[in-house]
Length: 372
Image (cartoon, rainbow, N blue to C red; front, side):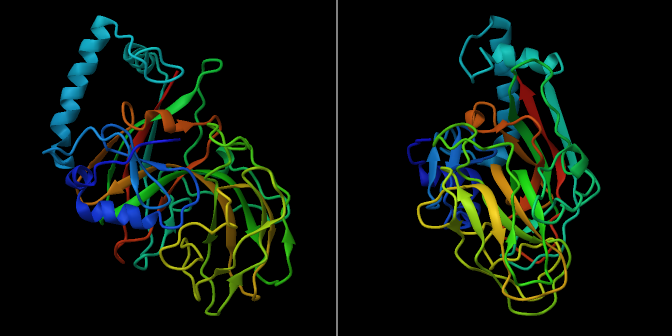
């Protein structure tokens, strides 16, 4: 994916300088492709160097708080284009905006409502909503090594809803979110998870394989680039120093035997937090690697109690919520539409990345997809 740089002053006018800075800081050290940023007209992405790229169609004078009027104007424009039978290209699978609207009307849309409960976070820590409960139901615990699992309908999280048409594809279309504390959320596809044996310091082999984002071709829509490892506490860990070391994986190009750089765990890590240093929501990879195709080995330097899961996720899009108690609207059609495909049997979940305060951020809202 190749994009030009985004005009920083206009982006700050639209999202707010503080939120732009936080999103940029969240991406420090990121090795995968740029990730779509929801709610920014034109199609904006943030890359591993913290720079924003893409096409920004806003921010000359207006801010995101003018969004309601803009949404109304777009709805009217969409209706006029539908009446005229527009043939402007949107994406593979959609010949025109009229085609997209028709698919909505014919039931080829998916609505994913959510009411998730957060846990009180430590500033700059990250929390997963996989076990947040309410709607959707809390995700179930993965099996132990060596096999692990590929999460699906029976595992919890957002229930995958595949297109009914043969060879149809599903894309993220829009969303809205209300939180009681400012936060940045990342929608991910949970590809693989496995429970680590915490009472042992010996290496544990893992032999499970992924079923999505498995291509070794760089730039492919289902490339393993960007697949990242999350080391998460399902239950609280006891106080004690520990490191995740001699953990091995197969990289995005299919090369086996790569070793993760050692990751320092968190003493007395709380449930649902990631057991990694503050401001780190993904495990680092060996130099030059940009994704994980398979996890092959886990090891902890200390014997502990509690439950820890190794999870391979793939990022879908950022949902930034810079202000509490205000509905944040995210549109992806005509923005980052081409980069936000939802694959069949996806297992979608939210991560709250690098908490902005110790206040719980309980997200309520929904997101939509459209198939074509």
